[in-house]
Image (cartoon, rainbow, N blue to C red; front, side, top):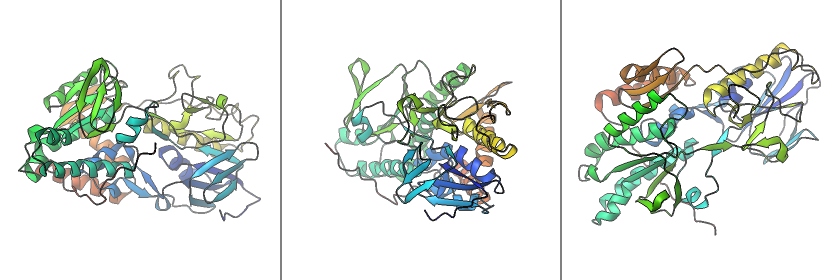
Length: 433
């Protein structure tokens, strides 16, 4: 991988440039460590706004930022664009598609991938939304099916092309349903005047008894009310059995005909080969209260991939969202920077990681959002403004903030989304039998 050996510095290899990995890469002291960051992309993605890329609200480059531009201090820092295939925990070597690399300390921050719960048909025919390419695929599919709807007089086919089913009623599903509902209300009449927007149906399917399981009951009820007002059909206590590309099969032998299924029903850790079965639980790597893996003293895991179950506040592991990932990244940086790493006693000389839940939020549409803080629950316009502010300041890079803010202002006053472009037509890969 063409990385020089520095005998005076311990080498720290970070796999993954998500919310947690990028924090470590930015802040680790280069006078103590040689830092190597590996990722399959050369950019960091602000995932909470992927749904806006998918629904033509933002261009992808406004939620992505070059990793090399994020890391300002390049002394003893190396970035390599690579896919990690295997980790030899005994030899302390990672194997990638561009070569192998020895590590003194390894930080795994690979994040999560979509969980289809073993259903191969759903995995093939539905669309996930965990990355920019996937969001662009979804955007293309949505716009292509609007175009195809214009080409047919078959009412049944037209209805199927304009029916959208979102599986998963968490923040992603709720925000996506709201965005599609606004497309129905504002975009269809403007861009497709010869399409009847009454043919566009939006279904949100949730397996549990309510939306937004991780938020308060008050916020869940408000989100339900707002989505119903926008015309979204909500199915609670609803499990999806199968999807063949045309019909979603639901429990109790009900079904929905649709050409558009968006899967937002769950994620699992993106685990790299090389770990044993006892190292993994619930598709995540087991760590202790100091984010160190259970068996390997020089391997740490942070973010979505880390599963800290010995925690009285989060016995099932921390939420697989950005705030815990960022806090874990910052915790590990301080731990590495303040102490000379000693595998025997570092955990004894440093306090355990404690996640501080600063709140959660979700937006449903124009002037509609919900926010849960420890001291107050907010809804409506004020919650929407807070949601926009938090996401705006969290974006990496001044340019990205300006572009996002400009787009939001224009869309607010013009009731219109301006980036409805099919740049890369979506074509589903041939199914392997």
